[in-house]
Picture 1 (tube, rainbow, N blue to C red):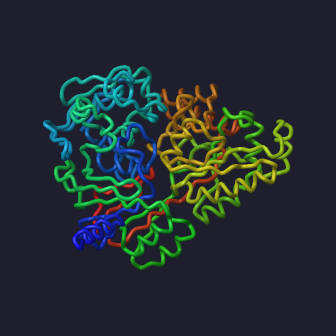
Picture 2 (cartoon, rainbow, N blue to C red):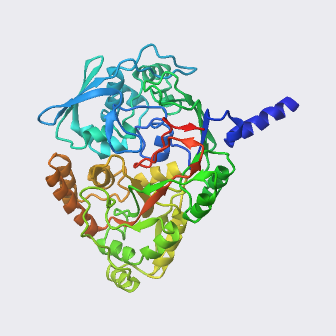
Picture 3 (cartoon, one colour):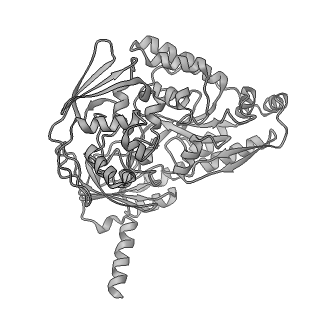
Length: 532
């Protein structure tokens, strides 16, 4: 009995991620905000999922330098682009090893077969593994990669060629994004033969800096250092633990108590307390992000532009930013942040005007007391530190103009899944840029190909779509800027979203953490990081 109690006590200590129980400098505990949707990056768009998979277990052909938007070689040592911009040839890195696990021991190193498997599964619905374990790939389809890649060729074991139908200006940046992580074709083949293809999403095998060991939903994810990592000297930890802690106050207390080394998304009201703690540092930078309210334009009465205009006019955006962001948010008027090239500075919000909103609703035939669902995220994100409070304030604003907002929420993964299916009327959500290109804002979130994916407004405007497609299919920066500027103007006229705010990103951590860099894309990477 005593032995059993001792085991239970040890398990409990590990579950809470107590830093003190680990050798100094060897283990880092990260207080994350939610459980990942899975460990196969391709089918997902959430930073929470990418932190636990792409940023730890996997690599990509090309990658962003940590803390930067600059692309560097990854599993591809080099690449060439044909003069017509349609053929990309990648020379692959040799000597890269895949992880081993209890159930899988690789018999070969990374090669072209793995690249072909990874991308063919995304672009070909008849690919055998995809047929056995059907999933959608929202990033690949939202950016049109599934239609634009006409040929994926293994030239030799260490050369791969992509042939495109049309020019895709941000193609290299897109391949550096988390969803494009390279999987093991050998591991997938083994799972397929065993009739266990779903295991790919539960027990990941990659080439990345950390090896997946175990996962307990809503509690912990455990990783160990990849001793064979191909980037020598970048893995400075022996163990990495994600202590999943959904409540912001609990995360703060655990950080202060030394139960985690790094945490995310502090409440603005807690920043002063965190900054005053001599054992902590709170680095920050301007967020490359946007929090917004999406209107499902396929639901009545939200299919009418004047109704969306009225609902936006009824929202006291300044009061929301003051209460929710508390000095760490800037008003958003465009569907991208001001630091994104091609941002249209001329756009302005309609003034807060409840009386005019009432008139517009009446003219549109919307009866007083009409109920509209108002979805609020269950987690803190860089672009929205308190969606519950924001929803309550919008609900109160709408009540003043005769609209009954019914606040609804779900677990984070379910929230995104149902939102993509269009179950909501209105939905609080947001975006942190992935690659520094305007298409990553306008195409991925508002394009016609993104309906059913990340286009939570379910909005497909032909003129807007033609402009963003035009912007993507030329490398002329001036022409791209002109197309994206016009597209923003159409967005502002049609209002599929009410844009709320861009926020400053704060990343509290203990002083003994060294080498951590805030990602412009809102991701959390722990290669190159150590603990004193």
